[in-house]
Image (tube, rainbow, N blue to C red):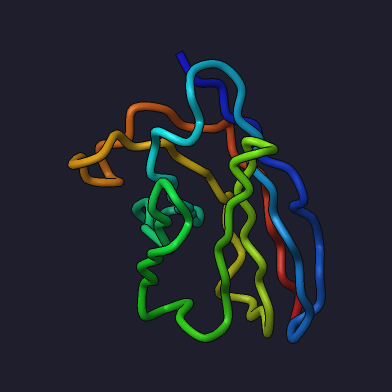
Length: 121
């Protein structure tokens, strides 16, 4: 069992930055690929970025490429999402997820409870 807890969300003006964190407890964190998703009101959940178990490989959605950056610290069982140049359309609840190797991020085994990000214009 893995428990994921996101933090770092809040209200920010357009053009600003936020850094989200997702801390994990439970089974071996480093054995999971990790991903970030978001869901805006009335919209489907959107995959943003995934990172490999060792943190070397990342895969970004076009909507955030160049603005968002994901990293992980396996010694702290934590992943981060640095979000720059934020836009009002980035407003959503942001979730982290833990996926076993070979499993799609959308079928991640564990999910956090989410953290709200609101970008004002």
